[in-house]
Length: 537
Image 1 (spheres, rainbow, N blue to C red):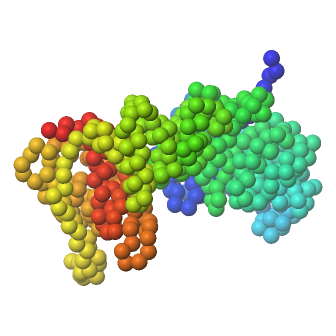
Image 2 (image 1 turned 45 degrees about the vertical axis):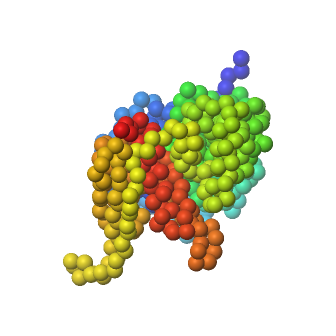
Image 3 (image 1 turned 30 degrees about the vertical axis):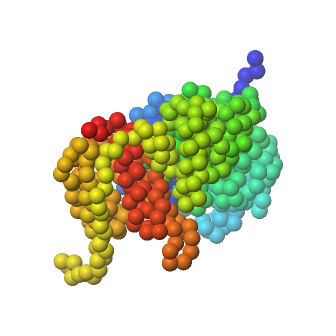
C-alpha cells in the first residue's frame, strides 16, 4: 500500500476572515469557532494579532482549549531599526499564549523599498532575526511571504532569498501568499515548482486570495506543485473578494481521487459529514443568510428543478452529481416549479416526509396547482415552507390553527418626544383562534410596516405563543413582477427559530405589497405550528 503524504490545514477565519466587510467577531465568537474547527480536524487555527486590538488581546488572554489544533498568533516581523527584544508589537505576539507564531514578511522588493524604506539586505536580516526569536521562545515559527508571486515576477532573486532565509533560520513553514489574488493557476504551479528547488515542499504553504475567483484552483495548483500546508477560511471569508474557501477545499481533497489517493488530511470522512453544519454555523454566528449556491454546502448545491433531469437524478443520482450530498452533510433537493414534472413533486414530498405514490391523482392536481400559482407570480423553489403548506393543505393535513379577521397598517410622519421628525409604522392584527370564540387583537410598532405587522402577528397567538416565541424575521425580499400602477408584487420571507437555528422560507403574491408580505408572514407562523405539532383545538 502506497503511503500518502500529509497535507496540513491552516485556518485563518478568525484573523483574515475578520477583515471581511460587515464581520465583527467577539472574543466569545472566536472561541466558539475555534472549538468547531478543532473538532472538524484543522491543524492550525490563526486566532488573530495579540495586542493589536482589545478583542484579540482578550482572546489570547483566555484562549480556547483545543484537542488537536495548534493555536497560532499572527504578527509582523520586527520593525526595521529595532531589535526583536525592543519591538513591543513583536514581543506581544511572541509572548502570547499561542504555541505557534505566523509572521508576515515583505517578499516584493518594491514594498521593501517603498513601504519599509529599507534595503533588501536589511529586509532579509529582519526575517532571519524574527524567526530566530520565535524559535528562541520555543514556539513553532512560520513566515507568510506577502505578495510573494508579484515579488517573484518582479525580482525572483529577492523573493526566493526571503523564502530561503526563513527556512534556513528554522521556520517550520514558509507560506507563499498571493496577496492581491491576481495570479492564475498555471503561474502558481510554475512558480511553486521553482520555489521547491530552494525550499522543500514539506515546508511550503500556500495562501491565496479570491480576487479573480481562482483561490481554490490556485491552492490546488500549489499542492500539485509541492506545497503541503493549505491556508484558507471557512466560507471563503476575507477582505475584498475573500480567501481560499476551506469548505470547498476540504471536500475536494477528501473526495477527488487525484488528491485523496495521494494525500491525507486531519479531517476524517466522518467529520466531513459535519462540514455543511460548520459552514452554516458560521453564518448563524455572523447573522447572515447562508449562500445557497456555495459548492458542497449550499442549499442549492444538489438541487435541480428541470423535470427531465429530476426524473433521471432520482434513478441514477451518481451520473448527475459529482459527489453524493450525504458525504458532506448536505441533501439532494428536487425543486418544484413551473418547469417541474411529477418526479420533482414526488421527490420533494418524500424529502418533507410525505409518502404519496407517483400514481396518486393528487400528485397531478398538486403539480397543476403549482404551475397555476406560479403563473400568478408565486415561486416555490425559494419558498419550501409555503410549498409544504400547499401540498399538505391539498392532502388535508393542515389544521386551521387561526384565521385573520382583519389587519391594518398605519405609516405616519410626526414629531417624537425629542422633537425629531420621524416615520412611525404601527400595525394591528385581529385573529380568531380555532375553537375559541373571542378574537385576539394585537397592536405593535416596528421598523417599517412589514416589521410592525410581523411583530403584531406574533405578539399574542394565545395557546400557540410558546411555539413562536423564538421565531424572528431574518430576510425579506421584494420583486415587482409586472410594471405600471397595478404591478404584481412577490415577497419572499425567511424566518428563523433562534432556539434551534432552523430557517424556513415562505412566499406571498399580491398587487399590494403589504398584503403579499402578510401572506408570507402568516405562512411562516402556520408552518412553525405545523412543524411543532401544535394542537389545533
